[in-house]
Image 1 (cartoon, rainbow, N blue to C red):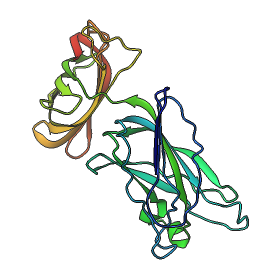
Image 2 (image 1 turned 45 degrees about the horizontal axis):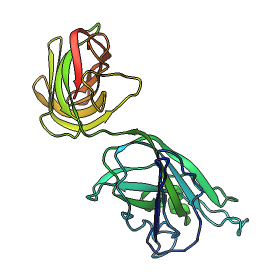
Image 3 (image 1 turned 180 degrees about the horizontal axis):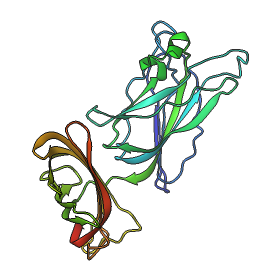
Image 4 (image 1 turned 180 degrees about the vertical axis):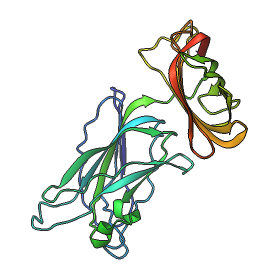
Length: 307
């Protein structure tokens, strides 16, 4: 079944039946709608570990009949159910699950953390399992997975029990902006670290980052991830742009050797860039040794410019 309601407070409520076999209950989601929240009801079919019952369902069928959930940073809350009150003297372990998130092409984005085991004597557990979960692409498909379906824990081998995944809430912390690019460079205050770059929020080329310090040099060959955001406390104009902060990761060459990595955050905090724009840069070599870690405001006439 499907019931879609778009709330005037910008929240999005999706109630979608989760297909699968197994025991069938009927537990409504108790999570409350609020601004910036997307709720998906995961259905009324239980999940269980294969070592519990022959032929039981360890993973749900994919859920994809919903509008894309935009990429961004989210707090994730799960809710689970089992009818414990009707069997008060029964102990049931490992009644928990997690979600696997996929993009519209069914490429895995990320797993959520698992909800805790449902306490004996309680029918429902609601728990925030992730805070500030980075979802790097729009969510197009969700699969619910019993914790013991993929776990090698001895606890799972000893005992695992069925659980109904009721619903999930995605609370938007920060939305990813994909339209834009940032250019610029300069020196980080109080250091000899100099950088120059052009990077795109949607990963479209060209993407270049050069960092030089002492007798060292890093050259980025590939921008692997990009996360552009707008901080309401920063006034980056002029010119006006949709974002002011670019957070990215990439791979490249350190002193000519392939296999180096970079993590960076570039901020355009307005004009002039000197003394207000900032950079955070961490570089590791091919052996994963940290060769540079620096952060601070720009000096000596540097500037970051969001477009």
